[in-house]
Length: 122
Image (cartoon, rainbow, N blue to C red):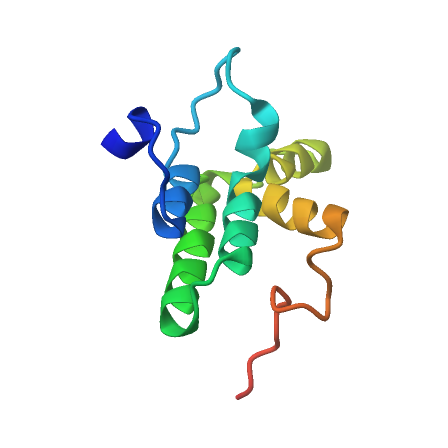
């Protein structure tokens, strides 16, 4: 963090950490577009970097994990007494939804990309 404050260049891993560990507190001064796309930006940054092999896979897993645990899924999945619109709004506000939406919006994520969900083999 001191390197960021000192305006020194950060390596890819530090940039990924900065993007994915930012507070998710709504703030009138905050850049909502950055907050909505930060996990996608971290994935894109990793993809464009020279990080390879196991290091790249590890950081990709870290990004997706942080994206998934960002939201209170227990509350989101408690759908009784909620109408469909409320469920849709809550789901659409999740970091996971915003990350996937940004991937599809930019054409960087498709059903044939590495971000696709594969059926488990039994």
